Amino acid sequence: MTVVTRFAPSPTGFLHIGGARTALFNWLFARHMGGKYLLRIEDTDRVRSTGEATQAILSGLNWLGLSSDETPVYQHSRLDRHRDVARELLAQGRAYHCYCSPDELQEMRTEARKLGRTALYDGRWRDRDPSEAPAGADPVVRLKTPLEGETVIEDLVQGPVTVQNNQIDDFILLRANGTPTYMHSVVVDDHDMTITHVIRGDDHLNNAFRQVQLFEAMDWAVPTFAHIPLIHGPDGAKLSKRHGALGVEAYREMGYLPDALCNYLLRLGWGHGDDEVISRDQAIGWFDLDGVGRAASRFDMTKLDNLNGHYLRESQDDGIVDLIIERLEGRSGLNLSEQARGRIERGLPGVKARAKTLVELADSAAFYAATPPLAMTAKATALLTDEARDLMRGLLKALTEVDTWSEGVLEAIVRVHAEKNDVKLGAVAQPLRAALTGSNASPGIFEVLAILGPDEARARIKAIC
RNA sequence: GACCCCUUCGUCUAGUGGCCUAGGACGACGGCCUCUCACGCCGUAAACACGGGUUCGAGUCCCGUAGGGGUCGCCA
Image (cartoon, rainbow, N blue to C red; front, side, top):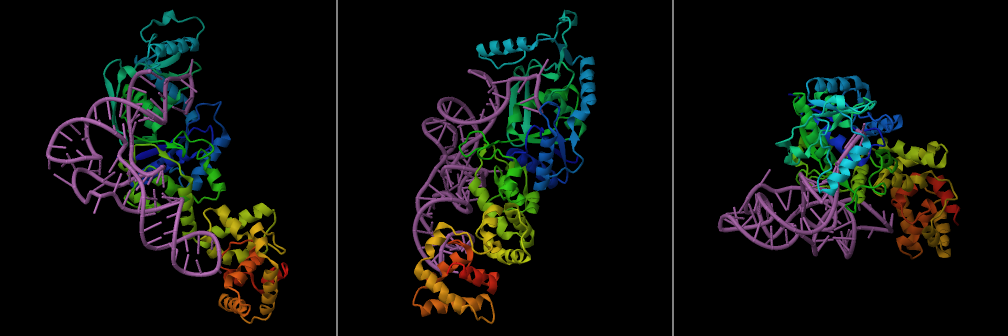
């Protein structure tokens, strides 16, 4: 039997970090098993579902490299099928009409809670004659679930979980307006899409017991379940917008690489010995569901930063140089000159070790694209004392006639200049850094000098003298 | 409240009854490298929630307690 997994988000918002991890696990498991990974947009709630949300989810998945193996299924387009199944159940006497008003149900719930019980529908229309139906009321369709016994789910992550059937009420299949509920459409669609493994958030574990009843009522094979723990915020509480509950596009904006984000998400709740940096191919080879932990994990931005920094350093320069230029041009609204682009390209290796995100990378490479006089940070200005300017004037002279403008030659010149003036190398290097970069921190100063080139370097030094 | 699930360093985790004097990673702290900041390298501190069992032996199995989370919609 071929494994078929699916990711089934509802398009009522962006693709958040928890959804991204669910998608990743589904994708990885399918790849690992040589199966298929499908996407289904759960848009049965026509009021809350939006096209923008669908687009955001699709582009987010695409960016992460987790797009579907087949054309996505839009759940609302399967309305007729959902109704047919409900009708079939009705015809077989496995479902029935219920005429309870929302107020009546609300009352039932309050009552149940008062009695210290789970708030469940009490089945009052289960065996009632339809002739007693109130005039003019549209009924919902409810499934007849077993009254006794227990239901066991052999969850691949949580292990065997047992629930008494009296904890499962006759839930609604079709609303009064004839549209299917989530509980109904998931089951019909999972069956029709031949889903073999349902991998999703822990918050659905309780729903799974209801869904099993429906599979069984239809005599359909019940898929294997794997309920993965939720991701919490750093404080252990629900992930809020302040930390991780952002759309993946926000992470893209913040300068994270898709591979780094996937690697981080993979390690959050799953482990493979001491391995930390795991490539996509390794992940496919190693991923398994019983390696998934059972406890919720906290989202830790600093670890993501560290991993992203690692991926940044390992990445091919030509892959990210465009991303940097794009960001720089986006900030200034101007197109970078050929010279500036060239400098950034050559400077990239030196700047990469200093950044954790593409944003930081753009920040620290920006000076290569600047034109004198440079904007100075406060610390850079503090470096440019009168003595320092004297040293720079002298250095400027020493730099006027250089045959080979190379890193090695330049280093020698600067070192000699420091010795001649009887100061430490730092006393020359730091003001020079301020002049050249507008900052007190940068890549190696001889490298910067070499990349800027004679004209630009001299112009920048002159500007502060 | 009822039901279900969870609990190893601050965080992510390794651990499947003796290999645990509990390992790795991030972070923190200290050092080395050094023209700055990083990177890199070396080192230090840091955890089996608690209480009972079972067993020759328990982080690992069982029970209870505490704490945390999830669910209880004509939302998904």
